[in-house]
Image (cartoon, rainbow, N blue to C red; front, side):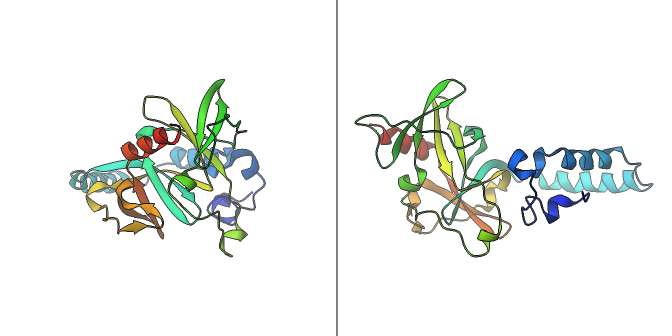
Length: 218
């Protein structure tokens, strides 16, 4: 297999690699891990120390800009983000059991995570987003639907995402103001926008997000 298969048939390529069914992302694949280890084991170049010193100096000048982590995921056409501090894990799609007189459009029911019952909600319905949509370009890729588990400290919640990119960092001072509406989501729940490659991500306020989750089961 090519040493750079992740760019060809892996998650960053056409996603035709059969190992994605097992590992879901190249980051978890032993081929990717071996390639990374080989970089660490190689002999440093003669000018490595000088170049590394310059790099560290440049990074220090940039550390005054505060950065934060966010979990980025897609629901329908919208790329959304939540602070990584409330992120609990990415799960395979769980079986949802409805709750009599409670389950409905937003609150879907409960699912089992490590032996515990966790409420499941539809963020798509919570934010009023369109049904799942794949463009012609996206249909050529493997897209794995997942459940995301979040926890602010008062109990976990699960919701479905059409695609999960994982954790990324953003500059808080570079957040863009949200327009009057972000798709159909209320702007009040969006702290700001940031760009991730060609994607524009709506960063949600986790305080308002969890408040809306709590209201969904009342």
